[in-house]
Image (cartoon, rainbow, N blue to C red):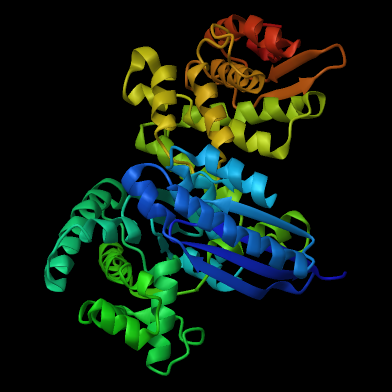
Amino acid sequence: MALKRFASIDVGSFEIELGIYELGAGGGIRLVDNLRHVIALGSDSYRDGEISFPLVQELIAVLKDFMRVIAEYRCTDYRAIATSALREATNSAIVLDQIKTRTGLDVQILSNAEQRMLVLKALAACGERFETLVQEGAAVVEVGFGSMQVSLYEAGKMRSTQNLRLGALRLRDTLQQLNSARDDRECILQETVAHELEIYENLHLCGRRVKNMISIGDPIRVLYDKIMRARNRDPEAEDFADKQRVEELYRYVVERTDAELEETLDINPAATGVLLPAAVLYQRMAETVGAEMVWFPGTRLIDGLAAEYAVANSLMHRGHDFDADILAAVQEIAARYGEGTVHRACTVKIALQIFDALKKAQGFTTRDRILLEIGATLHHCGRYLNMGNASGSSADIIRATEIVGLSKAEHALIVQILRNEEEVFERREVPLKAAKFAAVIRLASALDRSAKQKAGEYRVRLKEDGTLLFTTAYGGDMTLERLSFLQCTPSFSNVFGIRPEFRQRRSLGSGVI
């Protein structure tokens, strides 16, 4: 198969980056060219809430050059994304419109959850090393310019992920308001970071420690590369560091002025100000998670765009199972709110049986199955807050909870499912898919109304006459489940146009036919 050329553009908070890649079956992903332009969009966005006119004009000029380069390389396709600077800017719609009008470029603003999943896909494209580390236990720590993301892995599965507003650029801009000596700035940074990480440790680590830390993000990628080369060492060959080397990297930054870092590391003057905040963040994070070894893979967001494109177009084998990561993280959320119950697992199982029986007739997709499983897993987590309004509380909890791997639309769909799970049809504005999935979860929960898993196993089958038949061989009393099932039948029939039927096959020995 001929090689394809693909272009990735990342409109970041501190710089704009273009990557030109060659993709081919069996050949993996190869970066052919890489262009970067420093432009601190985040300084405007984080401080003023919008991006100023001069920066918009500079941004458009750079993107015009990028489009020219893409055309020169004859790329088959491209994707351009923007992150927190545009995500938080009140004039983002205007900026995107001007970019489209003057460059022809479609830029998509990613949610934080989408952005972090792309980063993880870039890591997975590194091969077996990522799988080995997450099997052993790892914290993936990405320090960006606007925030820091921490994703915990145990036994190869993501257990939790949290976003902390501790970006290197945010912290730098805070420090610039001070007229303090560098030692004072380090102390202020340490106190700021320590407070936030103490909260994170108490709420989310809960005494857990991990063997490995995977350090990614533009500040640390540049910092590690420059310091290693300044010491005549190869950062790609020596991409692992123990506690001692991490401390050495930290001391290298804090013991030098910005001017000294600029000279010794041959770095852009605009970038030196973010090195101290980045060094403090990584050093304190390594201490917090108890990491013995730190891996510096050097991946970036544009690599994730290329990896996702390659997998979607069958140009690269899909390695790590990110769907399993999403579901594992969702189960952790459910357990946090007291939903790690046998009944919840039973409801999820029955809901998926219903989905599988209806999939072909309803045109559901594999992605839909994952979304239904997420909704069923979380459907009663709101009882933790309010047992009298579990659905509304569940929706409120999940609206405020980030689920890495879901798009903004998918996250909104889950919230709608949860809000309407108890009373599906009281809201006319409910999307049809949300109403259908809510009806499925409601019916599945009714079939274990006693929470005793009486039926053991149900057989679910869609008959040719449009009846959805539920059959169980359980011979005991299922009056409660039958009544609950009948209560849910009208709403299910209305939304699907299918009549559910409950049939209990009792043995002759039970005395009931």
